Length: 297
Ligand SMILES: C[S@@+](CC[C@H](N)C(=O)[O-])C[C@H]1O[C@@H](n2cnc3c(N)ncnc32)[C@H](O)[C@@H]1O
Image (tube, rainbow, N blue to C red; front, side, top):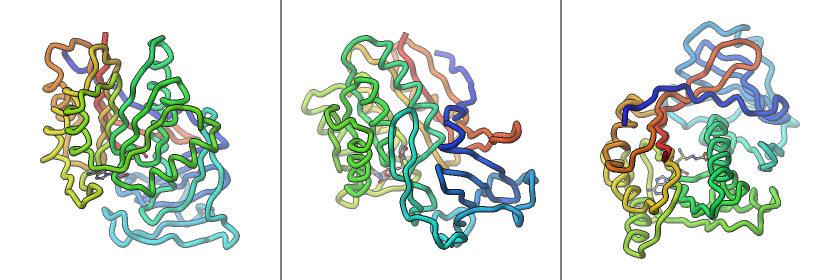
């Protein structure tokens, strides 16, 4: 299976819902629905289209260090709401400024949400999805909206709560989504023992994380074991696997090969590459993560 290198560009947002307005000099200016924000981004070390000092925004995240998610939000517009509505493709959510620098969604994943929906709809059969490290739940909602049964897993019960709220806001209460708070490694091992299987597995593991009982997750150490579990959980008719990674010192080739190494005999296509966000007013791209995507024949 020779991997195909591609760019995964999240260019499927309505302009009034999300836009990357400018980036450069270590910062980015974005609009999430009604709210614009300035956040640090160490990768944006090119000149901005307009000087950062002239950027207009409702709030700004001041990081403690460049590589650290910790820091605090400074309100530039004192009337900026704490939560506000956004939507993607009919999925409704509440955006908010979190202490972890993000706005309650990972907008660059929209390219995968669309891919998952297209594949699930085209399959024309019941599809069972496992979304590991599912966090904000947008992938789970996208798959459920397309007709799949979804098991959403994250160590954080709080984030599962947001996901459930967004399920209700999106009018998808009747769709089968299991919201589970557990450790990814333990849960997948238990699912293998129970004999459960999935046609689609999506995983977006952090560089470092903790399970519900304080289990540690370290990307490079723990991913091989988790990928072995992922393989064991695939159904007889698997559809696709999406594996993404942020802030790791790995190439997308390494990521794709780590995944391919567990899929011997399955055939199919392996795609790999960088995920990026397009700028609204020029041709530049902002890189965000790396990705490997296996697709059945
Ligand atoms: C990078 S975020 C995933 C973002 C997600 N793809 C989205 O679009 O919202 C990583 C998530 O992994 C969860 N996590 C960290 N360690 C975990 C573990 N051992 N088991 C399960 N979830 C874990 C965190 O709670 C966090 O929500």
